[in-house]
Each structure stands twice: as C-alpha cells, then as structure tokens.
Amino acid sequence: MSGRSYNVLFLSRRNSARSILAEAVLNKKGRGLFKGYSAAVTPAGALDPHVIELLQSNGLDVPATPPKHYSEFTRPDAPALDFVFTLSDTAAGEPLPEWPGMPVTAHWSSPDPILATGQEWERERAFVQVLKELERRLSIFMNLPFASLDRMSLQNRLDEIGRTRPTTS
Image 1 (cartoon, one colour):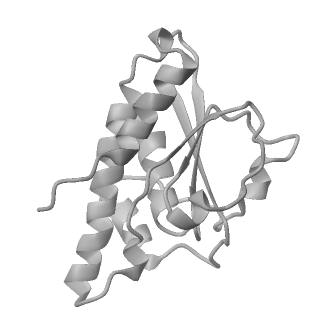
Image 2 (cartoon, helix red, strand yellow):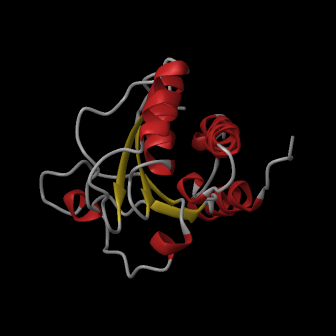
C-alpha cells in the first residue's frame, strides 16, 4: 500500500449512529493506514445511547466530540480527504461541496438503526446489524490493492462494495 495513510470521511444524516460506527471501526481496524472521520448533513445534538453502548461493548472508541456538520471538512485546516462515503440516502442526496484532496466518493447506503421499531432487543439488533455490515464493507475496502488500482478501477470497486447487501441472520 505504498506506506501512506488515507483519510476517510463518513457522512450520514445526523452523525449519531452509522457514520460514528464506521469511523470507530476504521480507526481501530485500519492499522494506522486509515484515519476515519464522520460528519452529518443535519447534526444531532448527541450520539445515540445505543451507539455508545455498542462501541464500548466492542472495544471501539467513543468520540469525545459531539456530532458535527460536514462543512467542518471544507475548511482550509481540514485534513485532505482521500475517500468520502455517504451512508445515508439523505447525505447522498445533498449537494455536497468539493472536498479538499479531491477524494474518491461512493454511496454505501445503510439502514438507519435509530429508525428501527419493535421491542428493545429488536432495536438493539438493528444497531448490531449495521455495525456488522460496516465492518464487512470496511474489511473489503481496507484490503483493496490501492497501489495497483487507477482511479476509475478504484471507483468501480468502491461502488461494488456499496451495492453488496448483508446476509440476514
């Protein structure tokens, strides 16, 4: 992978569940080769309590900062981004800015676990399923042969990862 590290931004509607989970997974499993960030189209006031519990129970870091707006990553002092992944259809439908670093972008639609209904165990299962889906996609992503892929090939692989659906358990 040519020894460099990659900055990855995950965007969701509120930055309180999916994008936070993706950021935490990438930062833990990225072996220092990937740095994950997350942001929202319309930031929530706080992280969802289910997310905090899930992060802690899986040994993942809970962010010290509240959900943030994606505009924070357009500032001159923002990290140059290599990849931007939208995780919600809301974020994918936004007219997003030109990001510093001219990142490769892809839409990895993921269900919003906050919208899950039913009994508490069913709601908790929705969060776990999203985490597992993100872990699977990010594992594929982190193992791509970046050095041997041109931008078009990389874009195709990222789009393909986003189209895969998890198996239901």
